[in-house]
Image (cartoon, rainbow, N blue to C red; front, side):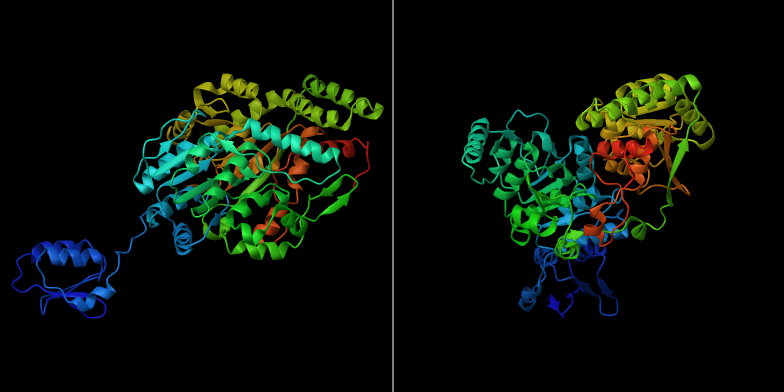
Length: 560
């Protein structure tokens, strides 16, 4: 007779026919007891154990039936303590969640394990940037033990049945042109009649429509800053999908879930809980520091920050990188002022004088001046290119492996011509499947000393911890790109004693202006997410700020 003692199912093994099989099953469990003096085996009161006992011919005490439960799933080995906490916290919740750990803490791993552990998690859809699809495929296969269907291309085809589907934001939806024309006409009539109008989402088709008709239990949105734009196709498609799948659990993932303006956070929060965060207008007026101008309302700031932070905290999981990974070495940003020859300096100075004269004479509109900053960046690099190559060569010789970030494809070609035998790299033109091969080669091949990454193509999804240093020889468009790029080495797996981010700068040039913008950018993100206002790299285009710094340095305008 099987007896339930309040904690265990107790089985007498005396003269039992199948006791060896039962003992074998018991030894596979972590929590069981064997009492040799009375030859009694004590098993957990799970439904699986009850079924096994009946199959082996043991009479069952019916009083135990109400206490039977499903076997508790154990978290897989290989997770770090804070990752286990993140998974358990997501499992404990029965509502949508924003996983907002900083870059380098393994957010993809945590979500993959969550899908494995959660009851009825499948079918699941993962929507992410195109460059991260292969990474998601690998992590789901590793942690969930299932192959995913990775979708490429906008052409809608019949999908094979799967537990997980992976697609990138840019191909999720396509515009309904007829509905768009109707919407534009409606806006035009409202403007002509002097009537207010509200922007409406234009229905999307393509894969979005396919997944709307499919039963999805979980929707994962990775790097949700990709849907911060109110009217972009990818934002409309993802919002529409989430709206129509309101009963599916949404897991949104990003260390920087919005850009510098708090208004850009609304789309993600609307998906998380549309009732709590209200309409877009309500959100903007309450939390985005509304300023009325003669052209209408502007929402560029942050208001009621503490209130918003408290609202978000219920739905957000966020840990400080150095708190959960105290073993990570400190990170230092270092500006290297390069020495160049007179002839090299002349390359930049000639363009510089012409630009300064155009501003003084008013030959260029402000928009043209901002556009000209890109030209100034190119000239700065042309002037310092030889000095950059020398610096990289010496670093590799004395320090070891190095990750170099560039902006223009021509720069990539120049570096490959110089260091091709000891270098690998990734640009926007690199096929998705080849990206990881380049990373693996840099990580595992001692002969490969240099990784060259185009900053816009390699800012997310790559782990390059075999180097302790990043080097920027060209500047990107946004401060956030630099922060994300720095974190390619500042992440789990880094074993160096220190981490450096070098910025190779041409003195007294647009480079110095860009560096000043990077190091003085106040971001509202920290105040909303962490409850403190600090200097961070933000995500907005910094060209206008660089232009203002340039004018201040040239004394064309007064310093603020």
